[in-house]
Each structure stands twice: as structure tokens, then as C-alpha cells.
Image (cartoon, rainbow over the protein chains, first blue to last red):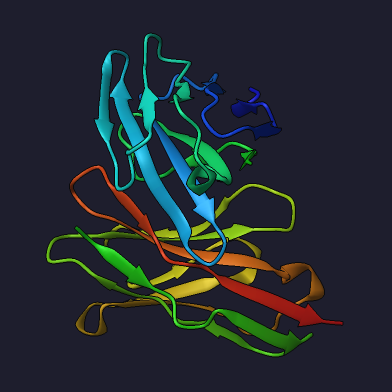
Length: 113
Length: 112
């Protein structure tokens, strides 16, 4: 198993541009999550999904959108990038019955200038 | 919603010193508690977790944590740290609302 994979690893965006951060897991996990990690702030939950077709907001959803058309994929969309969205983004997933135990991807570092 | 506080932002220790990192949480319901570690340049890995039962939880690499319900605490300990323990450590709380909240993290530097 590859686990949780994320692409790209690093990206620079201009203000107002849009992009999609990709996340894929091959462990047949129901739950998937998107976090952002800012220095000194820990991780904050952006969105999560309990299964294909179901998504819900986390602590900091503004400026982001998600979709979950398959069990494996959980892309995160930034429509109008802002400097405040400069961060490291982590995707995670958790297995059925153990939703609390999350497996993290390697992260995507995003810089918005 | 639940919240987590980690009071130590940066801890510097010499090898073989003992470690205790503080974690306090606030949440009115049943909680599941976690410690994650992030080594330089790597993603988060689970160190240990507490769901129920024995409040003293043992994890990987010689780490342990004690859940003290009366103090809303879940401190991480290791009797003797190694240089390879240099990393950032995150405490996290899962409530019954599908929401995981992380603390701000504690950066541990172990001097050889």
C-alpha cells in the first residue's frame, strides 16, 4: 500500500489563482480529512468526509471547497488564492471503526504571493 | 468544541535527560487523546493514543502518556531521550463530533 499520497509537494500561486490539491488513499478508508498547518498554530481541520458523496466543514473551511466522488480521492480546491492561505496542507484518512486514528500524507507546501 | 493547550513551545534537552511535555484539553464529553510526532521534513506519525481503560498508555519508541481526567491532562513522557527524538510533538483530542483538534505543538531539540 502506498498509504496517503498528496500532489503536488510544493506550489507557488499568485493571488487570485485557483488550484486543486490532490489526495489519494489506497487503504479503503471511509474517513478523509484536510488540515492546514501554520507555524506555531498546530493543525486545523478544513474539511472532512465520512464517505463518498459526503463532506462536512471543519474548523476553518472558508476559501476552500472539497468533493468526494470516490472512496480513494478527496481533492481540496482553492478558488481565489489569498496570502492567508500560505500554509502546509495535510490530507489524512482513517479506517472504518477507527475514525479517530488518522494516517497522514506527506503534505503540500503552498505559497501564495 | 474541544480545544487543546500545549504549554511548552520549545524544549531543549541533553541526551539521556527525562522528558515530560504538557497537554491539557477542554471538552465536556468523552474524549480520545493522541500524541503525534513530526520528524523534520516528514509527516505526522501516531505515537500513542488513549481511548479508555488503563490511563497510562505506552506507545512506540519508549514514549508513554498518562491520562488524568481530573486535571484534563494527557502529558507525554520518556525516561531518557535520544538525539533522534528531535521533532515536533502534537497533542490531539477527538470528540464525538468527528472533529480532531490539535495543540500548537512542542518542538523538542535533543543535544547530543
